[in-house]
Image (cartoon, rainbow, N blue to C red; front, side, top):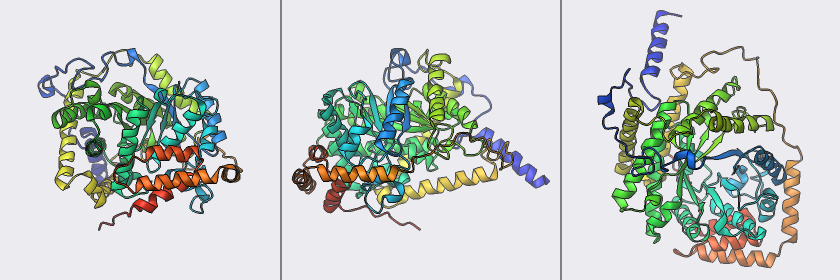
Length: 540
């Protein structure tokens, strides 16, 4: 190595050690004076820096989930029952791209993606199969779905109705955060403002119909995986949260009521202390913002409840068994940060749908942390650490600065409509890629500790049934043939009429459509006719 290259590598190493991934300069030693006032108050008390619960996990363990779904409803139901039999305590439903984007499986836009990254779920008939032999009154179900979230939520209610499960007993979460889709993930359908109306409809409806079910999980996770830092992830999430609060208020919602059903969703990456500080800062900031800006006094409405994914883009296809260690560290960070729900990625998710073996290892990771590590024994185990308290304060400052910049631009909705926020995330992704390629950001197995590319330890490979597409299309055709078309037409017409108004809640009509076995594509087409489609802005 040349002298110049050696000095460059040494500088990159020093920069990595002296700064967090969010760019916070870290002193070699944090003194008590630097940590400031660490009289944080008790867990479970405003502003909830330490925890939203006074007894932490001693009262109730976090919900253990595994994100799963592939191919047909039958194959996914089999995987769910496999995981539940092995100790999973909640379901996390992955849906294929056609379902996410509002296309039926027989649409030419859907053909190449049926069942590829999740389960195909086009009608109530498929949902009935998906939840066969699963007691919805006892299992918490999470759906990672956004553009068609209200429809899938309506479908879940229809399944519960058919099973005879009272809606008030249903627990779980539907992601339903369209703002981050425009920024990072891309499964948007309608323009921003009609989408905000649809989300408000679902949240206000859920407050009355499913009081234990969280109708929105405001998600920084995908913004993080798209390239943003931990501080940006939290800042954009809190900004989106406030935008939703404003929309729900505009629709006449009572903030002390609907705020109790708001939840949040994040990725956990590999800088353990920054991740813990991110969650502690976010919890504190949300409580203070709702209290100071909106006068919220109900403590349950001030609580920042969140779930996480351990894995995502922090996983590597190179030397994938290293990911077992990564997910273990990230799970520890999630627990020490106080997450209410955790799902752990399998080590092979960087390149395939998990096998039963890899999915079980991911599940066991959570169980080992919960039962053997002792980390869940006390609330906020890192609380009072000079470094953690100092870093929590620095994260709060950085998050606040990013949010102020968004406010100065005109707010998060305008920033999305103009493409400003999308450009910010894209630039950050470019920076992260360059840092990895140059070695400034060390990733073991990728730019550190590499080996011959011909060597592989990928082990068992997942194989999807080649008959999946045929099976899905045949079932869809049978459902269309046996349903009452007059009932479908009547329900869709009522949905369109409600969507054409400015104030009528469309959720009851979506539930009616699901009961009539209307398809996801038919419901989306009806709403598109009234609301149009989002056109992505182009920025230069």
